[in-house]
Length: 258
Image (cartoon, rainbow, N blue to C red; front, side):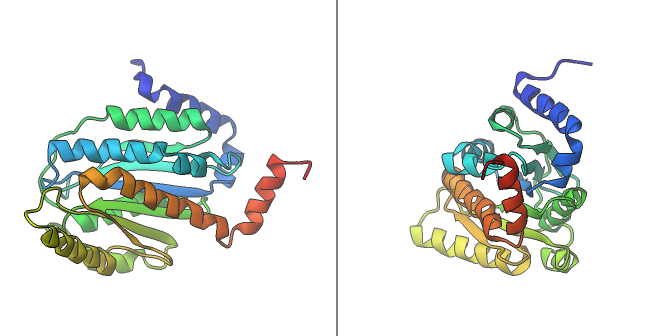
């Protein structure tokens, strides 16, 4: 077996830890986050890099780092996949439990080192929704399951998102979206109108679940900041959810003198 790339070694160590403590980790998964990134033909090489590095930067932002690592007894599971045409969904980060800062550092390094693969130019958004839900179906033990979909255009191949949405309603899975506007529109008002229309499309056809929302990035240059805002919002909502008794239990385990 070939040696793992250095960026993935922390993930391998985390996998060993998870295997040893499988009972505790599986029982106390706080949240599963599956993140689907649009790599369709409308996303060029520069925008792809801004998106991938932007996700890495968002995970590395102080508030997101704290939210991901604040409860080691009830960690967050992360998965990242890319989507474009009907045959072009690909996992670039398999399910990884964020057990500590080192694991998060390994995830960030892996994303930064990820290079663009060949993909068809279509935008199969409905299939991207199904792909994310299929990954989250393996995380039924997590208290909350969230699918993040980033996109800069409407679906033009495969099943329509509006027809896929009813399949997901009632499953307990939440879908949130990050809508990305054009980087260099001719007129500012055009940019606002286009991103507003795309946001309404995702609102009506894609997002699912109580408290689901659409975040906006004015262009891929704004992707990192928009993603950080979205992750902060997603990770903080659990602190006030119906799982509060479980959270108190975790705090007691971490602070036995209290």
